Length: 120
Image 1 (tube, one colour):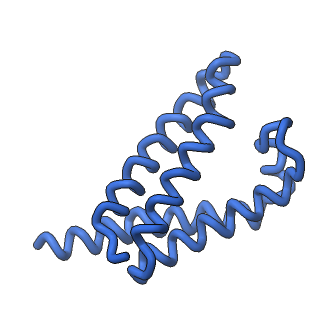
Image 2 (cartoon, rainbow, N blue to C red):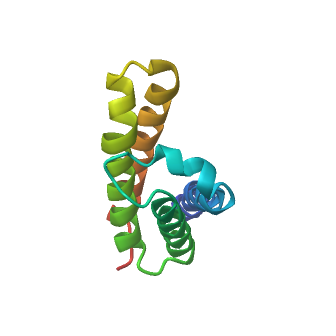
């Protein structure tokens, strides 16, 4: 039973991460405004992030370099928390930013847990 729940939970985590990656490619120019203004390159970072999310998703699903993928994904999500969501929360945009801050914090925790169970 543990093996089944482990496989199911891995897919339940990795598939939405992959879909988030696809959204970065489908909506790149619209998402470029989310890149902090002190970081040049706007849409480039959106596409790079999309590629990273897709790569992490595939790695977690096929169980190749999944420990590294979990660690890098968790770090990426914490960067989002610190550079995008936390400044928005501090600026007072609680209704939109706080749920995203909590979501990305929880997803980072899950990514780090998966890294702890990885095969690398």
